[in-house]
Length: 307
Image (cartoon, rainbow, N blue to C red; front, side):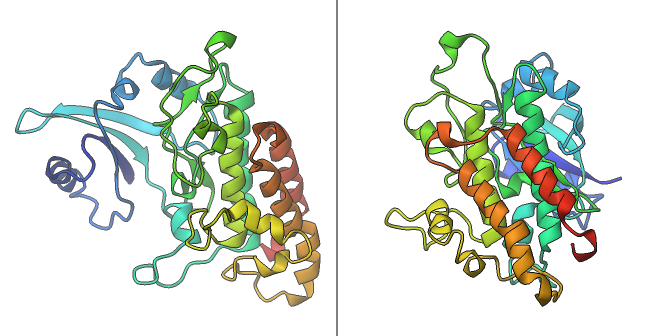
């Protein structure tokens, strides 16, 4: 059985590298780099009785990357070393599939439309679960393709809950000042304006991720300057010119006869959903329960033989 190591300590430090080389000695073909964590910043996450860890222990969702165990020890220099151990995800991250490295990723990997629909539906089901099916609701706060890992059968698993925050049930504390460690391009603009943590922040990140999966463009692409964003770019082409912004690497297996049908039945509804989720105002974004229901309907209607 193979595992992914999430390490507490200074990312990229000689201290971490030495330990990881030793820890991964039995995994010479290990393709997924461990995720570094600053020990002080994430100390509460590794505390046995922390609220985050206690709740993550009881989460029961097939599309959440669950930790197997926690390692805690001292190295030869008496420095504290901690690591979370996760099950190995054979197909790496969604990031690597959407934006393959032309030098190292050979042969070129592509995702079919059917695979993209399945992956985005998996991710939506996780957010619906976190927002609506556990108490208190949990906001991921850092949803992006590199935090979506793919199993042997391309099932998506959402990971990296290091930035996740619980929503307080005390209305007076909903807008308390909290450092949100999100990622530029995926972080909701309302957070930058001092708004409190909200499930609608995750909805925004999801909308950006969905548009990225359809267009193949990162929200930080060099073309997005002077006020142009991935949302605005997609919106300007919607709906009549959507075919012009579809990821050219999307594999549709040569079924040219289905192109127009697929555009009307799947691509346009997906782009519309991505646009609604990535609206600038949080009030204009749908809840993940509705988003998940729409994606499940699209997935159900999609002909599996063409996926």
